[in-house]
Amino acid sequence: METRVVNLTPHTINVVCGVEVAIPASGTVARCREISTPVGEVNGIPIVTKTFGEVVDLPEPQEDTIYIVSALVAAAAVKAGRLDVVSPGDLVRDADGKIIGCASFCRPA
Image 1 (cartoon, helix red, strand yellow):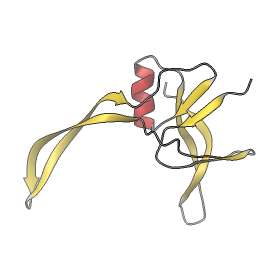
Image 2: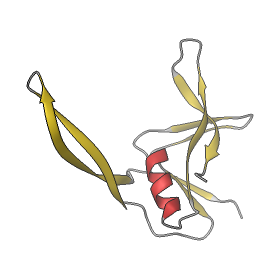
Image 3: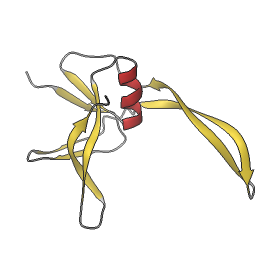
């Protein structure tokens, strides 16, 4: 049985590693809650510190399914014991330096 890959990022993930595949966004975006704390300002522009909390909109684990998420979400999810999440790894760039895809998936250690 082939593993189902669900893209929980807001954009298509292009895999370019001998096998080329475009994995469309699923319409659901997994994120970490953000907490902004004001710490000052410069020239009237607020300066805040950001901390990231719980992961939201990550479906429950399903058999033979992995979820593509951001590196931040993957790190938080793996820390919480989830092994069914990956983020794009080994980014591939064109001659102008624009990211055109990834050559692997990455699971945080």
